[in-house]
Each structure stands twice: as C-alpha cells, then as structure tokens.
Amino acid sequence: MSNVLKLSLQEAIRSLHEKGWGQRRISRELGVHRRTVKLYVDAGSKCTIVTASSAVTAGPKCTNISTAGSGGADGACCRTGVLEPKSGRQSVCEPFRAVVESKVEDGLSAQCVYQDLVSEHGFKDSYESVKRYVRKLKAKDPARVWRIECNPGEEAQVDFGLGAPIVDEQGKRTRTWVLRVVLSHSRKGYSEAVLRQDTETFLRVLENAIRSFGGAPLTLNVDNLKAAVTKADWYDPEINPKLAEFCRHYGMSVLPCRPYTPQHKGKVERGVAYVKENALKGRAFRSLRELNEHLRHWEATVADKRIHGTTRQQVAACFEKERPHLLPLAESLFPCFTEAQRSVGRDSFVEVAKAYYEAPPELIGRKVWVRWDTRCVRIFNERMEQVALHTRLEPGRFSRSLGAGGWSTPVRDTCKHWVSQASVLGEHCRQWAQAAADARGPEAIRAIMGVCRLIKTHSATTVNAACAKALQNGSHSYKGIKALLGQKTEQVHFGFAENHPLIRNLGIYSDFITQNQTQNNNQTHDSSNQHSQTPRSEAAPLRTAWQP
Image (cartoon, rainbow, N blue to C red):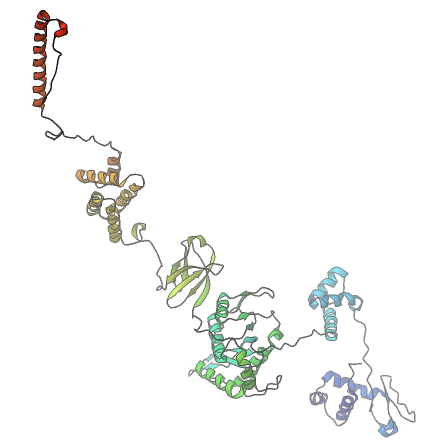
C-alpha cells in the first residue's frame, strides 16, 4: 500500500500530537499534508493493540501488534500500527472506467470526457464527479517528462521574463523585461533588460548574446512569441522572416518548442527564475543602463562562478570547454532594419513611416513584406523575393507621382522634353514644335506629343515636310499637321537644259535638213536627164552623205 505513511512518520505524528503540537505545526515540520496528519491523529484513539499477553483494546479501525517491551496495552494510542486505507463509496464513473481511461490517454480534458460520456453513454451525474475521477487516473499514471541534454554548441534556449522596475526621479515606475539566453550544455547565460518585446529588440539582444559568447549555437530553442514565430506548428512553423534572415546570417536554425510545453526549454525557464530570484528580487533601478550594468556584473561574479546543481561543474569552466564548438561569428553585424507586412493599395503604393513607396502593379491588393532602415526601403513578395528598392523619403512624400496634366515632370520641363523629342524627326519638326510652344504655351504639349507619335504611321520625311508647310501657313495645331499629311503630293516640274555636251544646237539640225533636201532635188534632176540620154544600167548609184 504505497499510500500509507512509513511507521516512523506515523510514530512522529502521534508523539508530537501527545506533546500538544497542533496539526498545522506538525504538517509544516514533517512535510506531510495536513489532512494526512489529521487522519492519523484521529485514528490514534481507535486502534487495537495486541501484546504478547494477547491484551486487546477494542478498535475496529486499526490492528497493531506490539511486544511487551514496547509499552504493551498501557499506551493510549497505537505505537507501531499500520493504517488501513480509507474505504469510500465507489465512483459513479467506475462503470465507464475503460472509456474514460482511453480518452485520458488520447489527451482529452475532463470537460471533453464529461461531454462525451453524456452524449455517447447517457451519463447522468455531475461534471465534478468526472473531474475527480480523471484526476485520480492521472495521479496513478502521470505523464513522463524526458530529460534533454545537448552536446556542446548544439543548442541555446531563449525566453523572456519580467524584470526589475525602473523608478525615475519623479517616482514613475516603468516595467522592464529580461531576455535570457542559456547555452544548453554549459548553462552559460546572458541576460539583458529591455522595454519592449518586438522583433527588432529581440534580434538586437540575441545578437549581443551571440557576440558575448564568441560564437553562435547550431540551433535556437524559442517559444512561440510573435517576435520569433508568426504561426505556431510543431511540424512546420512559420518563422518570422526577419528572424529567419538573422539566423541565416549567423548560420543557425530555429526550432520552436511545442506550445504550452515549457519543459521543452526547461533550462532557460529555470534560468529566468534564477535571474528574478537571485539578481533582481527586491531591487529597483533608476535607468535601463543601470539595470543592464548590474546584470552584466551579476553574470560575471555570481552566475558564472556557481557550481551548477545538475552538471556539478562551475559554469565558467564548463563554458570554456563548449566555446570551441560554437559556430564562428559572421564578419559583420546583422543589418539593423525594421520589417512589417503591408497591403498594396490601388495606386500600387505601400506606406512606411508616413511615406509612400511604389510596388509592382501586379501586387495590387496583395500582402508584401517591407524592410526599411535610415537609408532605403525594400519590398518583398510573399516568397521573400525583392521586387522593389527605394531611397528613404520624408513623411508625406511619394517615390513616384504624376504632376499637372498627368505628366511625370513639371510643366515647363515637360514642354522642353517634347520639343527635344520632335527635333529627332527633323529640323522643320523642331521649328514647328518650338513655334507651337511659344505661341500656345503648355497647351501645345499634347499637340507636340501627337506629332511625335505620327512616326508610327508615317515616315520622318513626310512628317517633317508637313511641319514645313505648317510653318509656312502659320498653323500650330495637331489637326493642321494631320490635314497636310492627307494632301496629295504636288508634281515637280523639271527645267530643260539649254546647253549640254551631248546636246547639239538646233541650227545644225536645220542646216542638215535643208542640205539634205537640196541634194535630193539635184539628184532627182540629174537622174531624169541621164535617163533620157544614158541607159539605166550605166547610171551612177545614188549616194547620200551627211556631215554635220
């Protein structure tokens, strides 16, 4: 019967009660529950003592066996008795024992067990009876907590705890928090007080701890605070992107413990309690700097010099053995920036510190991550890929915006820009654009833009010619240029050359024709005379000779 006290404790309870001690005092002195003390005190007057002479004192509750030398039957109470277990009525849940045990093994609470008994088995009794029965079952079969011991450099456990208050000269009290980082192998600790538990503060203190150790552990065991874990999950937790980037910088990995299971990081849990009880209890400080100086001095002179209760070694000496196993420190500090999630508005801008920065238009209406410092602002998509980079702006400013008329530059600069664009098409286009700007002012900007875009459907020569005609006509409108482009091209008249080495004088052709006619006439006359005097066969052949 494991629920019966040892005989020595039973004897002590009765002896002290005989001396007049109260039950509360006996309980405090012997470390026994007050109800147990009362049980044995009340049972003292109802014991049966059996001596060597078989002298029996009636008492149905307790049977004690003694020898004559132990006081015999003269004792007023049982000297060496064994208390029988108290018998009570059977629990109303006993008929459902197997059902309740299976549900308790599955991790269901007493409330869930009661609800299932009512709905599935028609249980009619109260919830309190089920709660008492479940409590007894858990007491008989408590959940085991496994001890975890890590190799050197494998793990560091991190947790926040309430720090000592800061009291200023006016008596105003400010609450502080202490972040404790403990190396799981050597129990070497680092403590720093802060005013907030945000991600930026968490990373700065964590980096200070790693730098003070002279190296980084392989893994970080943290609970599911928002500064570290955005969504808790035992198998695939969502780590805060900034913490993940920090761990990549130092080559570490984050392994959050299961929610509501502080025993998964018991070393730092006890370490936080040690700081609160030993270093800060009953103290108040005038500034945060004074508090942190006290913590640094306490770590060096008290925490590191102690012989740890589990390792049985001095913390500082054990840490010197662990130091070579830590990961080497990064060459540079982790960049100091602030990070937050933003929604991209319909104008494709996100707001950071009251200034506005442009994101790609395909992200409109979606969530993005924004990181910023004193110099620049970086925008990341959901896959943590950088999609935009901007220079830090003053509050109320936009990274890019349109001006009057929807232009991206001031009106005068816009006008000069489009005049220069028109000059690319030709000199007449430049002259016409400048003339239109001088005559119409900002009103001519869109007309010049229209003329510049005519290059998509017309050649530069055609547009330049139309601008030349418009200059002659004094037209400064876009419609006028379009009308000139629609007209047919005029025929070009070429002049004939009067003198050229290849062209003979017309007088030469006149003399040639006259001479040729004269010769023909003479030959005709001579031929008729010879025909009358000489036979045709003897007549001379006709010849024509032309010499210019």
